[in-house]
Amino acid sequence: MNILKTGMLMAVLTILLGIVGQLAGGQQGLIMALVIAGGMNFVMYWFSDKMVLAMYRAQPVTEAQAPDLYRMTRNLCQRAGLPMPKLYILPEMQPNAFATGRNPNNAVVAVTQGLLQLMDTAEVEGVIAHELAHIKNRDMLTMTIAATIVGAISFLPRLLLFSGGRNDRGVHPGIVLAVSILSVFAAILLQMAISRAREYEADRVGAEIAGHPNGLASALLRLEQASQRIPMEHGSPATAHLFIANPFSAKGMMNMFSTHPPIAERVKRLKAMVGAY
Image (cartoon, rainbow, N blue to C red; front, side, top):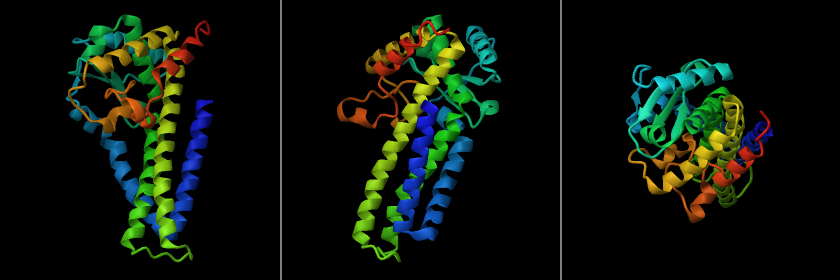
């Protein structure tokens, strides 16, 4: 269901791009916006893992340094049919984790010191399984494509302004600009919806990889509590979507714009899976 939802949202996003592109810049403007957004996200797709790891001061960890983490990850990879990813540790006391890398053969799983110190074995296993699910589902590629389309839609209103508001489709420039701006907002919401759908799917597949949903469900509840008490010392909210739980606690209206679905709903869905394995 989450895969179908992602496909439908991506289709709507693509249709929105085509409509706004034709209104704001015609075929040439649409192609230009796609090239610019695609170029930016091409760099992100190939180098985002190194950029994010550097941002959070993550350090590679060897099997001698973290034998339990390696053993757990290797066992989960065998269950998931995945190659062993590179493992990194973030010098952060907030328990959290993320996966990155352009494909399973170039994947990275990064966990915080807080995750290893504050979580029990079943909870850490659930978190690692969730991150491996992202790798297995190639969510990095999905989100890069979504970001490229959103980036192109965001560029189109600027293209209209730079062209002096001229268009050759007989539509008033003010209407075109208003539609473009509203479309940017709609595109961002669609991108967030895609991200949320991928989180639900990673929870489901992660529970399958671990062999039970209880560890991940328990970990999510503890992650939510810890994120409100223990701040993330480094990084940026722009990278929050990578983590299993938002490391930068959002409240009130900001929850509407979160890339993560509510923890309570995620736990509810996981609990409904109890007994399925």
